[in-house]
Image 1 (cartoon, rainbow, N blue to C red):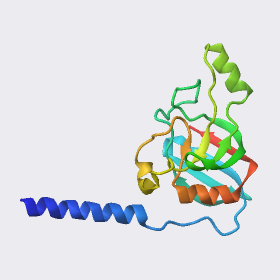
Image 2 (cartoon, rainbow, N blue to C red; image 1 turned 120 degrees about the vertical axis):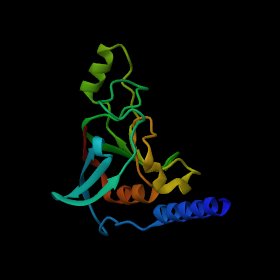
Image 3 (tube, rainbow, N blue to C red; image 1 turned 90 degrees about the vertical axis):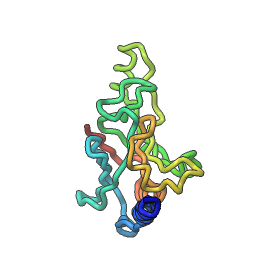
Image 4 (cartoon, helix red, strand yellow; image 1 turned 180 degrees about the horizontal axis):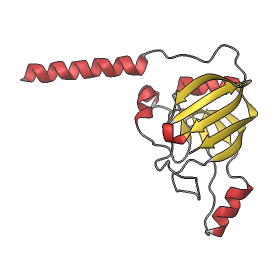
Length: 171
């Protein structure tokens, strides 16, 4: 019985290591992404250039991903059309791309319910020091409303996305 448990454990560990380290398709070299589309219900982010889909990423979202972000602390990822408004290579989460949330409509809505709109929504990697988690971060929605990728995926987008790039976040 103990031998079976050990064998099953070893098999699970080997499969997990292969999954976590198996190479994935990369963005074509020198890509210039001009549109990002997030489909929250599918946990996917698509990168486009000139109307052509370049790559689809599996993402993690806020702890409470369904519905539009209404206020600070609701753990939701916003929905709507925004732009990439910042790039930070000294982030606490590897690197990040800033999303221009909140817009005027978001601010007005939060004000109407008597709460702050929140902000600081990013496309980011894994918390510094925890990069070994790599693809396992995809298994749950764990952010406070941000869009999380692996560190190597954030590196790809960081190099290919300019400030001002449109991002559509859909339910």
